[in-house]
Image (cartoon, rainbow, N blue to C red; front, side, top):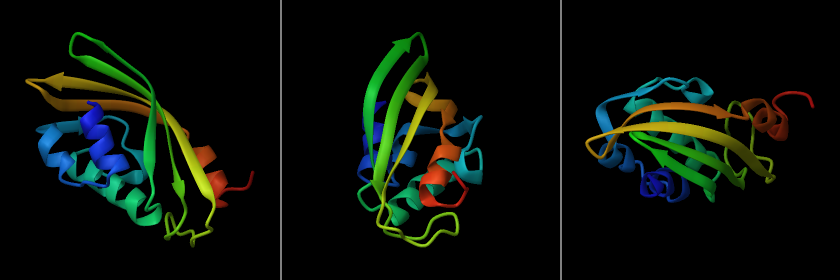
Length: 129
């Protein structure tokens, strides 16, 4: 799980989607309006890397039980490219969240998550504080 998170979000390796997500992957809570499938995860990773070249995820907790893994994290990066219609500000922006991942045969098949998208939008200036 940590290799997928580091690969896609901290290293910007969009191929991590093919390596770690099952073909029938379902994202029950897709962030930022992306599709609920593998391509949506790839798009989310690409969007963050394009707007925040130093985007990385700091893992606070990783808890596994049965086929579920819970991840609590804070991701952050410097706003260097347009995102959500907002021109680069040069500000460091953070995004705390919690994900629950379901695994099958060593691959990720499902995600549920809560990200502070409102706080993220406020930091960008896209939404008034």
